[in-house]
Length: 99
Image (cartoon, rainbow, N blue to C red):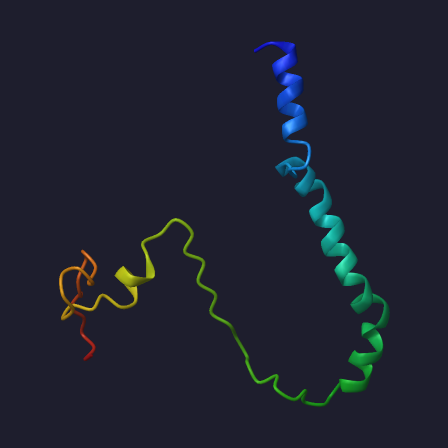
């Protein structure tokens, strides 16, 4: 590739944020968003210590990260009675539990 062509391509992509720049700025953005809770969060913790916070009833969370896995249509809801154009290719799997 000629030098002129490389310079032209550089100018074309100057407005696009590259991955390396995003990785450099990402931690700064996260740390910047944490500053208010670090600076003023102590007051809120002291005020609510020993008290139940309204709406905070969950004791645990189930987080499913299925990156690169099969689609939701084929795993959570196979729809075995649906027409062939709608249902997934895997179908239902028999289990020991009813339903």
